[in-house]
Amino acid sequence: MAALAQLINYAAAERLATSFDVAAAMLLVYDCSLTLGMEIEFVWSSPGGFVKVLYIVQRYLPFCDAIFLCLPHQSAVNIDPDGCHVVETMRGWLMIFGFILSEAILTLRVWAVWKRDLRLGVFLLFLITLTTVAEIYVTRTFLHDLQFSIKPYPEFVGCFLTSANRIVYLDWVVLMIYEAVILVLMIIPGIASYRRGENVNLHHVIYRDGIIMYIYLFALSIVNVVVVCALSTEYLAVISSYVYVLALRAK
Image (cartoon, rainbow, N blue to C red):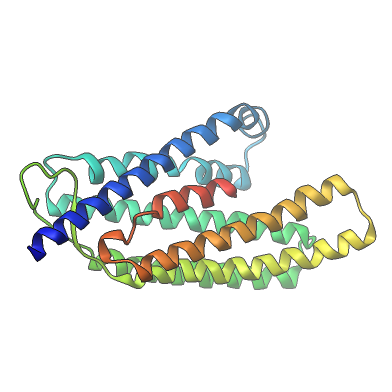
């Protein structure tokens, strides 16, 4: 009876995770459809450069891990445990790569707001390097410890996760620390700009909207930490794709 109850709970968690994954995929497609015209006009037609390539890769990378790599995990009929591990490893590394690209964009934005101050540039380079190393270490440990098993019954669809390391919550903690530092660095020049009475519209776009975005991302990270630490293993990644897409589209 205990095994049956555990299996029922797992199936419920998988159904919930599937709902969030589908919601994330639809949000991604919808958001891209809203901005595609502007991106073609102002991004795709602009001169090439590092920032343009960085933006395009970060913008469209989620289609790989949040849509295409979700399909085998959620709907594959004949996938074996080794295949599940390969798919989840690819998905995990692509997600962390997307986060790192997003942090790079945020770092460049803050550096621009500080008028490319050399000392701050060195600090930001150190910060994003430290963040990247920590994210890679945690992700490598988490993906290495993932364990999948054969289907518990013939009609089971997707991958059957049996064990996972909760160390993955540290990925979100690291992002929270990084975003807290970035938030402070954004608030300081924002207050100074407001006191000088500079262009109000520019102030709203660069500072007010930027600060709101950082607070929003910080709150998303807290939600994921609570989910990972408080719920059972089968709920470990239940909202990861959704939070991932929301975080990347906000940037």
